[in-house]
Length: 144
Picture 1: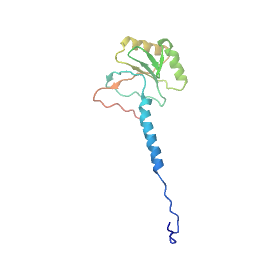
Picture 2: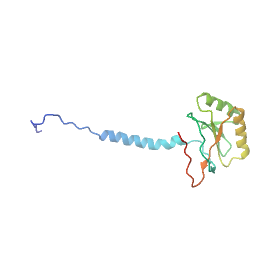
Picture 3: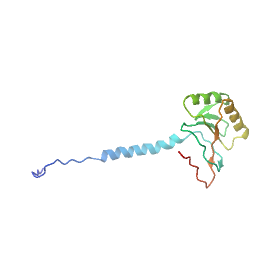
Picture 4: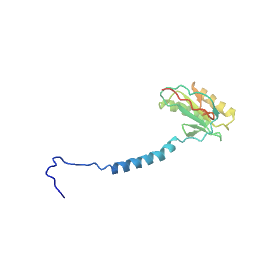
C-alpha cells in the first residue's frame, strides 16, 4: 500500500450496490402486489358517457351485484336481507355516506331495483351507479 504524505484528508466512498439491490427488490414486490390490491368482485360494468360524482373526502361504501346475483359489501359476500345492517355497520366504521353500486350488465333490472330499495330502506339517500367510460371516451377526472 502506498502512503502519500501530501494527502491531508481521508478518502471514503459509499458503496451503493446494496442500496440498489434493495430498491430493485422492493420495486419488483410493489409491481407484483399492486394489481392484486386493486382486484375486487368481478363485475362487467356497462359503458356509458357520464361524468364523475362529486364526493367528500371519505371513501364510499361499495355495494356490488355480480352476474350470478350475489351481493357484496366492500368485497364481502352478503345476503340481500342483511344488506341494510352491513351498510349501517360500514357507515359506523367511518366510511362515507355515499354508496356506490356496481352491478354487472347481465343482471336483470329488477334485481338492481331490489338492491336500491334495500338501500333506501337502510336510510341511504346518496347512491351512485358505477359504470365504465364509453369506448373511445376519456374517463372523467374529479377536481380535488
